[in-house]
Image (cartoon, rainbow, N blue to C red; front, top):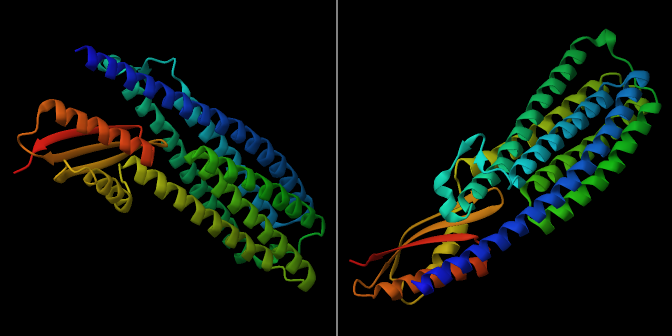
Length: 325
């Protein structure tokens, strides 16, 4: 019993260390999202103003695109704030009393899901804004009399937006990879699409000015909308798959091979990995010699859990041992 209590204390200490590591990463992600909000806000104001005085449908569409960046960053910020709220002892007002025995691990892993939830909402917002931009572009093309060549001043707005967004994308991508944070990865994809659309806006406005094509502005705004739509669908797809408890079968096979590397494991009966925000947990059922001592099977489970943590960074592996037939 003494050894078991010591083991539980050691596991709790390991979990607390991993929890603090994840919370520190989330704190860093929040700081970068605040930077995103400031950059998007400045660009949106500049582009909206120049789109109005410069009569550019494409620049207006790009401003709407950057407005979606503000909404997306705020949503991701809220999701991360909920995931970091370790002082709250319930979940949306619903207590989990049985979690007390696990030292809050179950509640915290569940709370990490909120980051993925708000990432998915970000994708939905991007899809909705893309639909609005595409609709506005089509409507402008259907009313050729209202079409006009943009003013040269609009080139300035598109150029400023492209430069700032490339910088924001680089920072988000670098920090997202370093922290292994899904929210910042989604923000990086969003900011990259914003940079590309701003560059496309710059080219489209320049082409309309050089060749005096009044319809090019409307066509470019539709292309911008399609690009926003593609990015939104990609973010929505990845986050919804995580929430639906989907896990890459090829990665799961790597986990299976790691378990089979232990000589005492005769077969992996079941294996299922789960995403909890950015944290991965694993449920494993293995078959061993039917005459193996209970103490030996318990020790085997602990060794497998340690190996999964060391090789793949899996925060918790639940190993169930059954006798081989």
